[in-house]
Image 1 (cartoon, helix red, strand yellow):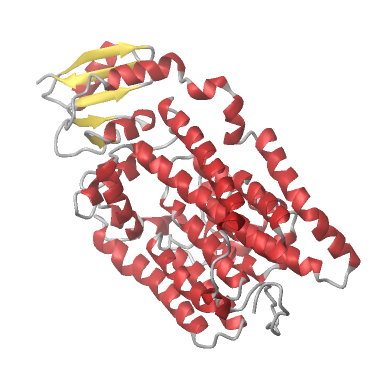
Image 2 (image 1 turned 30 degrees about the horizontal axis):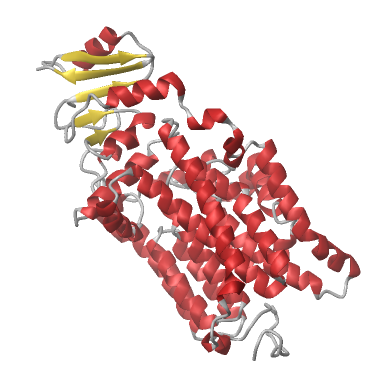
Length: 482
């Protein structure tokens, strides 16, 4: 059976595409893939320019990139990474269950720089654009496929993730697109196997894997579906209750404190539904998620894969998870755009005339929505035409010069802007995290008088004296003198 031959009778949920035995067919001619490869390469170039430009102007908004630098350095050394930024001696696997980051170890040996991680994430995101575009083209036609790929590449969730450094979910984004592709093409066994690597990305993704199992079960995969459901739930439970606490210095899963009911108050759970319903930010985020696909993704059962991620975010006590900042929506974008492809195909085949009209205009709508969001938010891609994006000005120059006064291999305390840069070649700590002794260098960017910085550092470490070695703009570097 080929794409142009009559389809087999489909199960009730009716995803379109080829049957599983088509996976053995010879691949299409290379020219069929070239437009999608070109699209992926184009987005990788744009993503890389934006990420590296932000890094070079010292605009990192948090300590996260420094944490992943220390993680990559640790895996490159052949042992479980120690992330001193989170606390002296803190093991990376005691924070999140992300053994897939061991893949960054060999890459660090080849390219020991935070830029490697930024380029890696750009490549993973851009690769997912190419896969989604080709999948959409196979089901909906080349033009619509490429346009959906463009809209997905411009989607606000991916752009937000790119703007907030590197995160382990970069690996999940292409995996989710591939899993969705296999579901849409009715390749059930491949969907089963491709979902398993998600277990290595982060502990909560076990629930997403279980959701894939639910979709397999709905499609009468009586063996694969239940197996995947059990594996996914059991993996998340084991990671949260056993594996992470084993590596965590406090012996527990730190993020319990982010969930309702962590205080042992049963009424927290009884008011949970009401609190979610009254959180304006939650509804705004849901509107953006559904709206970026012109609400067509809601017609596809594949959209259920986003439920576990959205559930833990929106039930959390931490309002940082409710909104559209940071990197939390990148995985959701991968899911809803695959669901968009399925939703358009379903609408095309609908007996309702208004749905068929909606589907014919949906692709144009999602591209327009993505472009408008990029221009109006503003999102990072708008920075491409801003000259200030490529020059951090005097402050970045001062930081670059000040960090240059610090030798390799020493202990350093620094804030978020300098942390990833200095973590590549020193033992870097977040201020106040080192306990075994005073840091050899301290970097500040708050504009205090340099002698005041040195005096306060000395006072904070009785019996030790710090001396100013660099001061320019608002940047001061002090060194442990004795």
